[in-house]
Every structure is written in C-alpha cells, then in structure tokens.
Image (cartoon, rainbow, N blue to C red; front, side):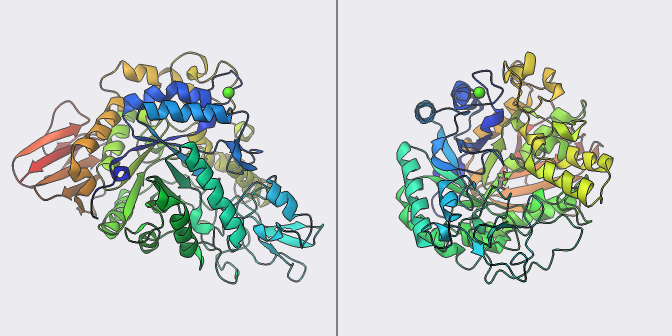
Length: 558
Ligand code: GLC
Ligand code: CA
C-alpha cells in the first residue's frame, strides 16, 4: 500500500431505505425520511452512506430487481428528492454510495420486455437465452432463491437464465452494447453527484465457461448455483473496462459484493495494482452457520469462535499489502450480529454488541455499519410464516416445508428466526413512541417489540450506550493511523473463548482482547510496558481477568 486513500480511513453506514424512516405515513421508509435523519449519521461520525436500491422496481426482491436504472421508485420519492439528499449530505460532509445492481434487471425492464419479443430482436442478446436440452432446462443450475435457475418462455421456445428469482433475468455481459449502456448509466449517476457504488453480486457477471452442470446439485437439497457459476472467464476484463471507462475518472469509493471468493480471487478484484474495484465483500464468515444437511443457509447453529477467527485472520493476513478488506458483521441479507455472534439477552446485549464492534473495528479495512447495529438491534421472532416478506425466506419455506417436506414447520421457523433476511429489515427503532418513530402509519414489516428499550432516543441519554461506543470507534480510526496501516497478527488462534490480536506499526502496537463468552476468562498477554487502555466496555480494567463479553484495546508505544 502506498499513500492512504480517503476511503481506506472511512467508515460506511448502510441504509435500507424501506426500513429507515417513513416521512408520509404510508409505512414505507423514503428519501425525505433519510434527509431528515442525515444529522443523526453526522452525529455518529461516519463518512459515507450506502443506500440499498431506490430505483424503479416491482419489488419482487425489494428493489434488487430494477426496471429502470434512472427512475426513482415513487414510494421512495423523486429524483428531486435524491438531488436534495445529495446536497444536504454533501453539506454535512457525508458521501453517498449507490447500490449498482447490474448482474440482472427486473423482467419488467424494457430491455427484457423487448428481449422476449422474438429471437432476432436487438435486445435478445442483452440476456442469456438457451435452447432446451432434451426438452429440459439447458443445465441443472439452481436459483439462489430455490428452484431451477432457468425459466422457459413458450413464445420463443427458449429458456432464460436467472440466478435469483425468475423476475430477475441475468444480463449478458458478453454483449458489448449492453456493457456500454451500463457504463453510460453509471456515468449519469456520477454526474448527479454520487460518490461511489456498491456493486451487487458483481463477480457473477461473467458465467462459467460452457455452463456445465453444477456437481453440487443433489435431489432434495435446497441449494444455489450462484457460486459455481461465478468468477467466469471475462469478469476481470469487464471490470477493468468499467474501471477505465468510468471509475478511474472519479475519486469515488467502490466495493463489489462477491459471493464465494477466496483471498486469491479478492487480490484479483481489489488488488492495489489491478484497476478493478477498491474492495470486495467476502462471504466466508457470514456463511459459517450454513446447513450441513443440504438445506443451504437454513440452520440455527451457533458459530464456533475458532472458525470465525481463522477466517477473519486469513483475510487480514492474505490481503495485507496487496488488496483492501471490507469489514462487516451485518447487512440487509444477514441476521443481526448481536443475536448471532453475541448474546441478545437483557443482561449481555449491550456488552456483547460493544465487544463485537471493537473486535471488527480495529482490523484493517473499511468498516461497514448496518442501520440499527449501532444501537444493538436484535433479530425478530415472528410466530407465523405469513408475517414474513422476504422472497428468499418465503421460497425456502415453500421448498423445504411444503414441497420437499424435508423440514417440519416448527424446525423451519427456528431456522427463520436465526437466519432470515427479515431479521435485518425490521424498521429502524428511533424512539419509544408507536412504531418506534419509524412511521405514523402501519409499517410494511413489523417493528421489533423490543423498541421500548432498544431505540436511538434512549441511546442518546445514556453515555454508556452502544451508540457512543461506535462513535468513539469511528473517531479513533480518524485519530490513529495504525488502525488503517498496521499489520495484523492473531494471538492464540485455538483459544475457544477469547479473540485477541495485535496490530503492529512502526512505533506502536494495538492489542485487542475480546471475551466472546458469558464466563470470566483469565488470560495474560505480555507485550511491552507503556500501555494505555484506549477503549473498553467495562468501567475499570481488571488486568488478566476478562469479564463476560469484555473487550479492551491497549495502545503500546515502543
Ligand atoms: C445481493 C443482494 C441481495 C439480493 C441479491 C440479488 O446478494 O444483497 O439482497 O437479493 O443480490 O440481487
Ligand atoms: Ca413513505
């Protein structure tokens, strides 16, 4: 790494617009609602916000199915609202990153509508069409949301590929005209003043050569061929082209969402000398609790700390000096971290949320905070499947319970309470008034019943709150260059209860110690002498005794 770039010191805050703040009482968060809350994000201290998609969409997958990249979904507001949001954000010194969903569009996008009309029309080749093979789909690939990844179109007697829902047809990036349309659209957004892109499943844009059968697909399993089909032969060529034609012309932030990547892949996507992306979201630590029984991500297993440490440490070490990491516990696709890797009981929620925050925020990379994480929002336990909205959850229930009968309804509900994407999507909890201050109407997804005790307003009046802890972590990153540049070294990898690591700089070191258990632990780490405690989640320092979910970070000057 040469000189530190602004985005290497930044902390990003992800907004899921539908659930952030409703301004007009229709129960759906919107852009005026975001504008209203920008001072809150300023107070937290983040430098960048990332918005999940706000574009025109039939909402089959909550906006990740876009029918017009240059129009705003009316529920969210207008392009004038977006301009106003950019203006206010920039005045506050906040940068704005947009979600870019270009592996697929909605089937209601006019490109796809035209593509369906005939085999020979100009848009046919914007998507991936194949002839049937022996009267069946061209291969056995599975959609990430269940069922075949191919949908038959009777009118033209061919199948089209959709790695997600059948209302999300995959674009054909091998078509140069399509690529130019995308670049022009990206440039248009940059002209509006946006400061970067988070690129949805961007390593899927070039499909595996020859599209062979996926050997992992087995009868009765709930799988996905997303990873098998990923990292195709032309993906780097296309990203370099995008970089050359669009990204390199602007001082922006880019992150690619890249399921299934190894650290070697990441060095290709985000290597300092590669001219592709600045960083990627890897999936390894978020898939540790996936099923071992062929049920895809559906399980309710607890993650083993040693496995978690091994993965995060591998990413810290293998990318050092070569590529940049993104750091995240949460996003709109993952359950709440305090419920998952911490302890969301009344006794330990606050301590364990702070412990998880410190553990992640002292690593090398750009941290991402997902809305509500900074106040320790938890998973939700809805009693009936009918209360869920997420297509992934609903399809999996249908597939595993109703169709395949592999899982009982009770078991599936337990998996959903642990893993459903709706855990992350319940409305933001602002205060203890009706609907947590999210809406005056009826919220599109239930508000978590714990909003009376977990909300932003109460967090402000408590100096010991999770919110102020995050604020301090964000400020420390600005003050201490070692957090950005230091080399990472894990300590006692096999320790099952404590996660300890060092960051090693030229003249100083950081020692980060986190107790992931509800039991006291005794540990002794001996490095240098002149130490100061820069942050911790207990009032005092008990030396070698680590209390339940205790975290503490020492600065060691050498
Ligand atoms: C990404 C998004 C997810 C979406 C999928 C298809 O994984 O984060 O929400 O369902 O891509 O666009
Ligand atoms: Ca609204």
